[in-house]
Structure formats: C-alpha cells, structure tokens
Image (cartoon, rainbow, N blue to C red; front, top):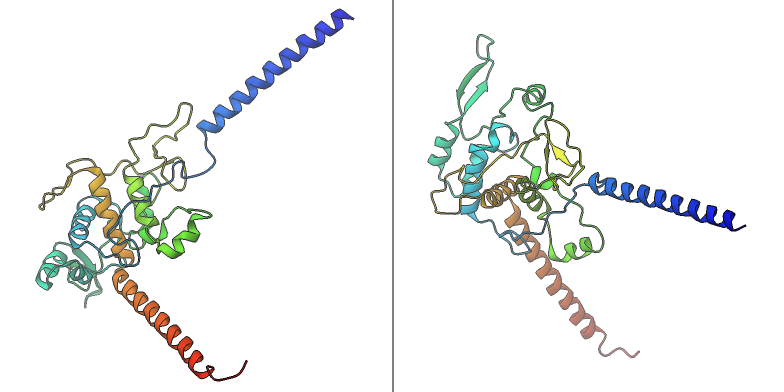
Length: 287
C-alpha cells in the first residue's frame, strides 16, 4: 500500500511539473506573440488644437509641411489637398504659386492626344510619388503606402469605456495625431525575446495592424533643417507633421469649433429665455 501511495505521489509531482512547464511556456509565448494591436497604446499628447477652443499653430503647420515635403512625400501622396489651401498656413499667394511650381504635374491629353508635363499651379493637388497603387506596392516590399490626405482622421486607436464617454465632453478628436506621433517615435523599441518579426518588416509596438510594418524608420534627428530654431529631433518632427496632417484632414477645425461654441451659447440663452417666459406666463395661474 505504501509503495502504491509513493508511486501516486511521484506521478503527481511529474504531472504537476509537466503542467507547470507547459503553462510557463504558454505564458512566455503569449507574452512574446501578442494577439492585440497596438501592443502599446499611444499616449494622449498636448496639441494646440485640442479642446473646444483649440487653434492651429501656423508655425508648427509650416514646419510639418516641410517635413512632409522633404521626407514623407517620397512615398505618401496627398491626393485630396490642393496647393492653394496652403494660404491658410500663412503663405501669400505668390509663395503658394512658387511652391506649386516646384512640382512637375502630368497633364493632358494635348491637341495631339499626348500626355505632357507642366509646372504646378495653385489649383493642382499634391502629386503622387507613384503612377499607381501597383507601382507603389512594388517599390515598398509589396505594401502600398497610404494616402495622407485624411490619415489623421482615419487612423486612431479605440480608447474604450469609460474614456470615450469623457471624450464627448472634452471634444477629444486628436487620436490620429497621437497615433502618428507614437508610431514615428516608436521604432527605437526592441521586440521582446522570442517574438518573430517577418523578414523585410520593422518592429513597432504602436502599429495598429500588427507587431511590425513594412515602413522602416522614416526620419532621424537632424534630417530636416528648421529656420525658426525649433528642435531638430524625431519627437519634434513627429509632432509637427502630425499637426500638419491633422490640418490636411480637417482644415476648417477652428471654424467648426467657433460655430459649435456659438450654437451652444445660443441654446443656453434660448433655454433660459424659454424658462423665464414659462415662469412669467404661468405665474398667476392657480395650480
């Protein structure tokens, strides 16, 4: 009987050890291979356009345009943004014309039925760096870079309950810029031990669709020169281009907020007048 009990005890220890090892291996695998993305959620940054009274910083938008032109435009298009809207960034009409003329625009057909190239004019849109999506994908490891016209509104991480409830009252709409800033500054993270990164991709814990993406780190410190003395760092570049892309996606943000404030003020005043009128009308009525 004693031998049987000893055998059962030994068997139990073996099974416990095996189960514990399997559980530890599973936990390590789950830690190395996450099933939710992004692995790290973006932090809520401070933007000049945040809140119900937020406004764009024209200096920051101009720096962001410079970053887009010198870095991002090599791969990403902005098909919905025209050059003439750059006047909203504080540029004069002459400056916008000169800026547009720096681009070669394909136009046509001409009288002979042929396409031709001309200098850009303010009514033109920002030209795409590739002739079509297939060419863009072929030049970027099979992944066509997305258009940047609305990227700041199209890309945002869900904040979940109860945060989104407070967002209704704080008018939080900066999820896109938060995500863009986090993604551009997130390349310095090292993948956890055991995590497998597909060849030709780059680990970024802030990427919204997976653990790695085809785009390599696009910008480094000192890559873009600022004439206004702003820091030439990846963090500053990321903030500036995120603000610029927010403006590109919602150029009338300031007007929308001003209109919303006027509407809310009118409704409050109207509600107060209705209440006082009701009190006046029913003051002498017996209840």
